[in-house]
Amino acid sequence: MKIPDILAQKRPAFSFEFFPPKTDDDAAHLLATARQLKELDPAFISVTWGAGGSTRRKTLDIVSAVKKDLGVETMAHLTCVGASREDIDGVLAEIRERGIKNVLALRGDPPKGSTAFVTHPGGFAHANELVAHIKRFGDFSVGVAGYPEKHVEAPSLEADLDHLKRKVDAGADFIITQLFFGNDDFLRFRDKAAARGIALPILPGLMPVTNVGQLKRFTTLCGAKIPGDLLQRLEAVQDNAEAVIRLGVAHAVAQGRRLLDAGVPGIHFYTLNRSRSTAEVLKTLRAR
Image 1 (cartoon, helix red, strand yellow):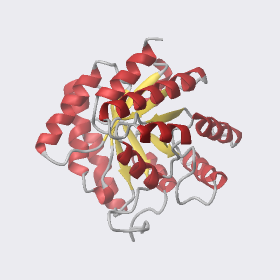
Image 2 (image 1 turned 90 degrees about the horizontal axis):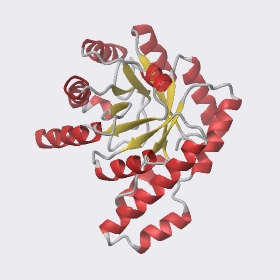
Image 3 (image 1 turned 90 degrees about the vertical axis):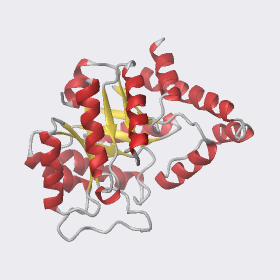
């Protein structure tokens, strides 16, 4: 089923994101995690795409296994990095053959060791070009990324929203945001998007904090801010793994409650391939 159809039927819709495993053991663990999270009735599960398609096989194998073996709808990520149009057509053909209906179209981050995105000579420079190409290729539902605090390369939030509008105009069907920890940033972004005529469903992306060092690395890479009071509380207990997890769950629950009260169509959880914190947050939100 296509994600817009799911969102029309299931409100609020909760979804989970995984990254591809590196080894067979990791793959088995990931599928076990997905099986645990299936009990929470997710709207869909997405799997990320490695730089330059480095995890192509694992990404497609996981989305196929989750859909076929677990009966959960899935979405494959797809990027422009290191790929020609012919490469992308090959991936899309395989996605279609595997029965996957949903694709998240991203420009993608530079490969490890590179500091800037380089357009493949026969590829695409921007996500809106990839969106339009996917729509021409076949009958897919296409999601795109939104950045409540702007993309790290964008000169301003306004410029970034202009680019989001180009992705929407190219045929995007829904938006999933980068992770954030301050709801005001998301609500401001949503209002500004609406003012630009963007009327698509916007799913906010939340990541329950499980490790302070990891949190700092992630936010440095993606440009998200850590609210000062949250960082202070986390640093005070950063040597106590259980206390960090409890704080992370509590903050994500508080975020989720306010977002649901604000009328979001659902929440997309960045799981880091773990089930515990995400499950606790979602169970608490559903218990309201």
